[in-house]
Structure formats: C-alpha cells, structure tokens
Image (cartoon, rainbow, N blue to C red; front, top):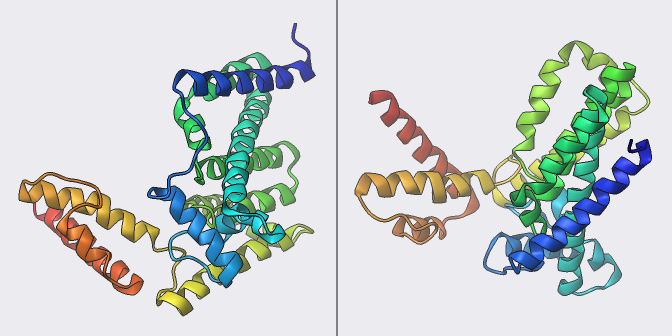
Length: 289
C-alpha cells in the first residue's frame, strides 16, 4: 500500500516526467509570442512597473505577478522566464490540491487516479509553456474550492472568507472570475455577517479595495468603471465578428477583417459602447427568429 506521504511524491514525479515527455514528443518549448496574448501580458506588466498605470485589458494582479522581476532590475527575458515558471508551479500545485480535495471526499486511491487524469489533460499543461494567465487562474479557483471544503470540514468562517477573497483577487487575473465570486457570495448569503466579521476579514476588505481600485483606475484613465475592456474586445472581434461574417457569407479570419480593423481605431470607451450595441442588436435578431 502506498503510504500517505508517498502519494504526493509520486504525483510530483509523474507530473515532472509527463511535462518532460510532453515537451519532447511535441517538440514544445517554453516560449513567448510577441504577436499573441503573451505580448499584451508583458506590456501590461511594464506599464504597471514603469509607468504606474493599469492596462486596459490585463488587470492589476496578473500584471503585478508577472512583473515582479522588474523590481530587481531584471530584463524582459527574465520576466518571461519568471512568468512561465509561475505557470508550471501553479499547474503542479493545482494537481496536489485536486488530490487533497478528492481524497477527503472519496479516498486517496480514487483521488490519485483523478489527479493523473488532470495531469494527462494536455491543454492545461500546454498553457503553462506560454506567458499567459490560465494556469494561475485555474490554481486560484481550485484553491478557493479547497478553502470552501475546509470550511465544510471545520465550520470555521475564516476559510469561507479566504475563499471569497481568493475569487475576488482572481478577478484581477481574469475578469470572468467575478461571476464565480458573486455566485459564491449569493450561495453563502446567510453567512455574510460572519464572513465579514472574523479575524481574516482584512483579506476580504483588501480584495474588494483592489477590485474597486482597478475599476476606478480604468474609469479615470480610459472612461469606464469596469474591471477590464477585454470582454468587449473579445466578443466583438471573435463571436460578434464570426456571426457578422456568417451573415454576409464571407470567410471569418480572427482580427483580420474590415470590422476588426475599424474597431481597433476606436478609443476604449467607444469600443465598449460599440460592442454592447452590437450584442444588443444580435440578441434582438435572435428574439425575432
């Protein structure tokens, strides 16, 4: 029988070997694409550390995490390597958290098998090879789930406070996390007083402050009280553009069509308005069908 401590070590060994095997078979190396999303993350980090300004598409926390080496005078190359290292670290600890959660709910053997299944999901691992935020985002979601699990085990309110704090902070990694945070708050609405009134409530207040600061900064610098403009840009250039091309019977090329070129010339404030108007028009069209 595998002892308690050996399961974690075995998972760690398998994770490392699988990452090396995956990289060798696909000839996939950790890298940086200046023309992809990688470039926008690097720009946002430089904007924060050198100009003390928050980017319009990449939120405060992910920029702060990626740009830590700038504090010590390191170059862009070191920042990129640091970001990829953080990705692999988060991917690894996500596996361990998954194992711990499932082992408490079921048993250690089943948890081990599910963790191996997660390791084998090449999409999750592939993200870690790039200067992106997905690995950090997934880790923070699972970390919040782990804290909620600890709350159910112990009935200690501070676990719930920390879980919600993590989800709010994760909004500053990827804005979509705000939905998860709101759902969690609504689900535990009866506990709301206790959530705010315990010795760890400082973390929740800090998370809310940083979220407000993010939105206030975008309002001040770009014109809208929002977490990020990325959702509007993504909708308009992908979902909206694809629907428009389908309607006109033309080939859809992401970000390479007349609609995208025109949209890129707008200010951030106008972008969010144009995207919202476009979405409303399409929703009305669907209702008429």
